[in-house]
Structure formats: structure tokens, C-alpha cells
Length: 577
Image 1: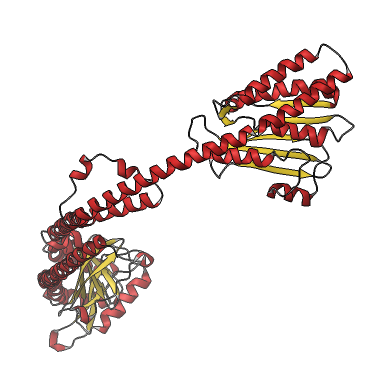
Image 2: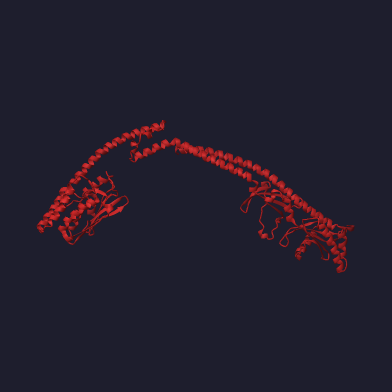
């Protein structure tokens, strides 16, 4: 690892240990608070369950008062005797009036009805028409109580909690059955009034008996949610997810009816301030952690930046870039005075000395290359002059025409261009002028046997190349292609652009070369029919001018002609070796 990474890792490790220690300490403190909250929540649920069951006790006591009422005890036996229907109706009306008096004392009673042995009804409160099957079930359940109150849970037929008990005769302790009292209770109203003003109002309270939900009442059991009771390991409370929200879950079991009371209080409402504090602490710690990490990064960078800069300078010099030696002195005066600063100063002195040696050696090599370039170029002149004079001589003998003047003019232009050594590099356009004058001379010689075409764009004509590069290639096409052909020879010069370079192509439809001969020409091993000055000369001058990435590319196939590509840089400046 780098030094800065080591420093950063060390500081990050210290911060991580501090964060974990703080986090688990806070979690432990909040777990203690959760237990305290459960204690309070359990007490609240216990008080609520006591309040609910107190109301049920009152209703139980009310049913006891009704079944032991002297008037009820005296009227019910009369109905069971052989009396007229009118008399039975009158007696039941008296019982109804008595039930109305009792029902008026309790706001949580929906209705009270007394069923006699003749299946007659005496009702007070809201009239409920139960299904016969429901009524029979209530009568059977009340009979199991043997005079005690039986609590019947809500179902699909009725959503009331029902208190039912048999009415038995207590005269002479006969305990004969006289009828049944059925009290329908507004249980949801009881729960609503009891939990009003408590934290349970913000959540949800649920009351079950033998896995049957009493409150809230679900008319469709398919919609009733399933709640798993809390395990003893959780000491009666846990945090559970319902419908995508977190709830504080508490459970107790009542002692009077044995019902299970469960409370679901929204976790966010209870822990709003706690969660806010947690978030504040977490954000604060994260912000402080980021600040410390930024400071750690800056600190580690301050230690390693000078070393990295020195490594970068070394890599720059490794790539051959010695501009560092020519940098302003002021930039070096700000270097630190520690060990790294001394190393930077020593390195700069060494680079300056190396740069001076390279500059001196470069000047010497440049002089040598320039001399070689001019010597190679000078070899072109006698070779070209010989061929031109031969063409003029042949034309004079063959025709004796005044067209010789035109050839002489073209020859003069070519001689001036070749003899002038002021500029070693000329534009492609200037080179094309030389080519066109040479073609003028050769046109007089070969007439319609020579078909020449040139396709060079104006932007390519502004590029640089060594003087007399294309003309010798054109001369080779005439010498090796046209002169050996009877039919017309097609010679074309065109340009092709590639990324960072341009290819000037000279191609003909001559006899071409065999593959073995082509490889020998590429390696410079083939023997020429002329003075021996040709492709090798041109390629060496291109390499001297532009570097190893440029030169000539030769392609030929027997019977399909020859193509020579001159590769030069795609730039118009004087950036050449």
C-alpha cells in the first residue's frame, strides 16, 4: 500500500472502532429504554383490560339482578301455565316494561331479551331478529352455564358480544328453568371509551379468546389478520411489522374472562423523539466521520504529494520529456526544505545536466542527418538528367518537330527544381508541379500509350514531403511498366487519409512483380536495371525527415500492376526531424 493509503486506513480504522463502540452503547441504552417502555405499556394495557372487564362485570351483575328480580320470577311461571294467548301477551308486556327499566341504566347494552319456555320473547332496546339457528346456539350455550353467564363471541350472523344465562326459579331452591336472558353488548363502544385519552388510542388494541377475535369485529373472517402471540423469550413485547409499518407489540391475559389483550402502538409515535435523537446522533457522527476522513486525506496527501510529484517527474523524464529542466526557477524555490525537497532539487540538477548532454548530442546528430539527406538528394540529379536528355534525343531523331521546345521548357523547370537545395522539404502541390512537367515530357515521347491521372485534394497539397519523392516513383512506373507494355499504360496518383497520416499512392496497370521479387525489393536486395538509385533513396529521405513511423509501402501482383504508397504525417507545420 502507498503511504497515504496506510495513513488513511489507520485513521479510518480508529474512526470505525469509535463508531461501533458508540453505536452499540447507544443500542444497549435504547434496549433498556424499550424494557421500561414495555413496563409502562403493559401497565396501560392491564388498566385498559381491567376497565373493559369492569364494564362486563357490571353487565354480568345486571343479568343476575334481572334473573333474580321478584317480578320476573313471578311472571315467567304464569306464562308456562295453561293460559290464554292474550294473558301470555299481557304478562310478556309486563316483563318487557321491567327489562326497559334495567336497560336504561346501562349505555353499553344494545338489547335485552327474555325467552320463556313457550319460545315467546320479551325485548327491550334495539330489536334484533336473530336466525333460528343462532338462537338455538345461544340457548344451548346458556344451558351449559347452569345458571351462570355464558359469553358468546361475535360471528358472521351478529357482530355483538352476547351475555346469556338461564333464568331459574329460586323459590324453595327448586332451580327449575323458567327461561333464558340474552343481553347484546356494544362491546366496541366499551373499548373505545376505555382507551380514549391513552396512547392505545393512537395504535390498535385487539382482544381474542381461544384464537377467536372479539375486537375489532371482522364481519368476514377471511379479512381477519393473523397475529402470532409473543414468545416468552421476548418477555411479552416485541417490535413487529404490519402493513409495512413498525408497531410496539404488547400482550397480557386477563384474569376474569381469560381473554388475551394485545396492543399495537405505532413505533414512530412512541419513539418519535428517540428516533429523531438517533438520527441526529447518526448524522452528526457521519458528518464528523466525513470531516475527519477529509482531514485525514489532506493530511496523508500533504505527506505523499511531494513524493508523487517527484515520481511523476521521473516518469516524464523516462518517456523522454525533458521540459522539466527548462521550468521556471521560481517553481523550485517553493519546494519544502525537508528530505523530499532536497531529493527534488538534486533530481532537477541531474535532469538539467542530462538535458544539456542530449541537446549537444542532438545538434551533432542533426548536422549528420542533414548532410546525409543532401548527399542522397544530390544523387538524384545526374540520374534524372540522363533520362531527360535521352528522351529529348529520341524525340529529335524520331520527329524533328518544334515540340522539342516544349520539352526543353519542362526540362528547364525540372533542372531548376532538382538542382536547388535551399529547401529539403516542399509541399505536395510543388511536388505535383514537378510531376506534371515530367509527364509533359513523357507525353511527347509515348503519346497515347501513356494515360496519366492525378486525384489530390487541395488540403493534401499543403502537406510537406521531401523534394523529388513522387517523380522518381512515376519514372519507375514508366520504366518498368510502360516501356515493357504494347497496349496503353494507365498511371494514377491519388491520396488516402488515415488517422494521423496521409498515403500518396502511385499505381500502374503494368506487368507487376512475382511475390519473391516483391519481397526482395522490399528488403532492398533486388538488382535494378538503372543506376541503383530508387525506392531505398526515397524511403531513407522520408525517414530522415519525419521519423521511423513513415516511409514507403510497396504492393504488387503479377499481371495486375504495382502500387507504391508514400506515407507522410498529416500535418502542415515544420515538426520534422
